Image (cartoon, rainbow, N blue to C red; front, side, top):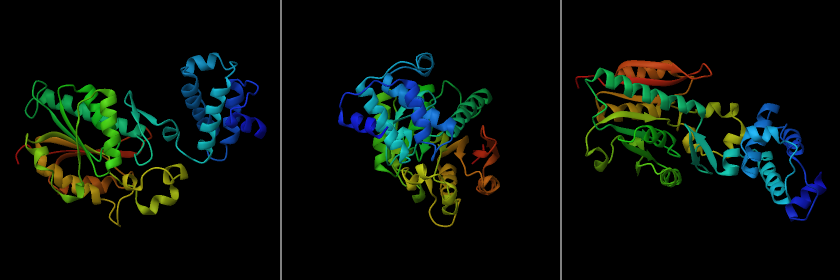
Length: 316
């Protein structure tokens, strides 16, 4: 096996190996980091990227041999995965709400749980339109995504709401550059700006056009005490500033977001947040004490309290 690996990396001709061989190899070589199901998923991701074939076709053609260049790519991807590097970074892409997004070091990888927050935003807008007293479909809709990262939430919303005016901000210039490229690649109009939400105010040019109907955020919420429970492929590769809350206050960013929402949300508008499953009651109480109405916590598909929504009072 090691001899074959050296041949692949040196570009020397070697015997052709089929997808069955690579599937077995991935499962064996990645067993120290991943269970069999995860390792097989990583194999299929790599095989789709290398071959250009979708998974259903791969399943039907597992006996197909790879040429030497494909085998080299499979080997190099496996080598990076063995070090714990996320597969999204290995291939430079992640998928979110039907969009293919660029991701890389310094940018948080979008999670499936956050797609549920995106869907809740859409449901919220539909409910607002039915009520008709705070927003109607024919009216301009302004949405702000704070701590946007790769731009996943903002871009997913832009893809479904072509007439909305959508803004996204982040403190990280690396994240914002990535979000801008994703917007360009997807041909979706989003206004981006660099901002530290802990400052408590938004730039004048952002608020000049009026209040927002929706504010949404997936801020840093992992506490330092939770580090020991996290996998190394997250800790060693994904940006700490997008994961961990500073200091000892687990609600630090939520307090800042509540303050911003009270200042810049339209009457009857909503703020929707992804939260740490360990603090649903604390987030609920925080938003109530900040003056919001209809505060609701929702579980994700894993049954964990992962999202909270609150409404700006109708009379400010």
